[in-house]
Image (cartoon, rainbow, N blue to C red; front, side):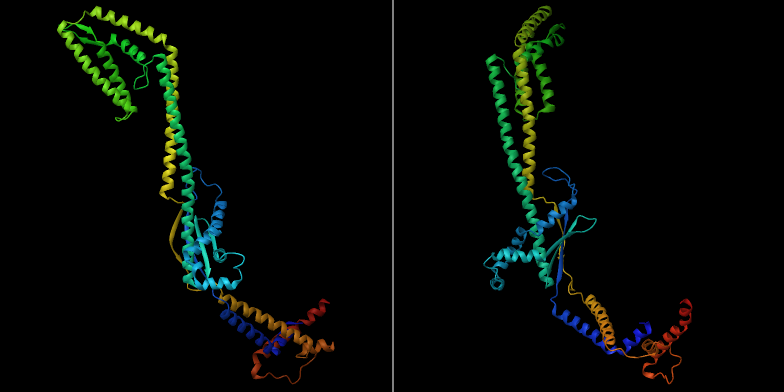
Length: 454
């Protein structure tokens, strides 16, 4: 079949083509009127995907899996049933009647039945190249869709906060228990050290050092500390002055590591006050008696130092054990401080309500429905109607062929047509006749070329 024959058939069967086209368009318009309109409302939240987790301290590595998990949480029955409760659907008489008529009352409760409908209309997706999660809900009314998607977003955020608080609270309770155990270990170690020191006759000072070693250090520095004796001579410092100097050094060290309210620091200050009074009394007595001879005082200090040294050496093993116990206690105190800090951190996390989800504005719903898409339906009806009309025209023509031009006559007789006599174009279809004559002339001129090619 040539192109001119095709156009002749379409022109002859133009009423069939027009009827098929109009029928499809009418059906499309009827479908647009009958199909229920569907509006899609959107609500957005921003996910903190890069911020370290406040509980584990780890940074998210698999973004796709995390996003998919959040989407499944949004479409979970726990979220949907809470949405149903907030909307009050389960107590709505009209909805209860629909539930009774649906026949689902025997298999599942009304909350579950309504939650399925919420899940069926809910969707969520992560916007490309961003941390924004868009939650969507489909409904036949734009205001209803916007209200429901707002509730879904709020319920999802509250559930996320509750989940984080529950996890942080559980960890806070665990660390609190560890803190109590660490405190018990510290107290036990301190009690063991005190019992050991008592059994060995070792006196511990406020800074956890033994008294004998402190006295030895005090006596070792006595030769380097001198005071002016009456009459301009130099005399060795008294024992109270020596101990006062050592206490001043200990207070200077404790000021950098202990606070002013620390019991050890306050004990050192009280000891310094007592030694200052004792040193003042010794100085007054020395001025009244003229003071001891410098040589005698130095000899007594050296003898006292040797006796104290022997006493410390004899207790070296016990003092080493005391020092090891002290280091163990300090280590346990450091562990206690770390565990207590963790417990406070997680307790703060459980009470603060910080969340990895940030709401982004209000939910929005379009004024035009997402479905049905009128331009797409009309375009499809136009294309389908045209194709249907062409197919029907060709089918009817093939069932009853007619001679509509010289091409049909040549095909039917098997001989060429030499001339067309009495052909006159009518005014009603002059453009069609011109097109047919033009195509006939092109076909006629192409015959010698086709014959030569054969």
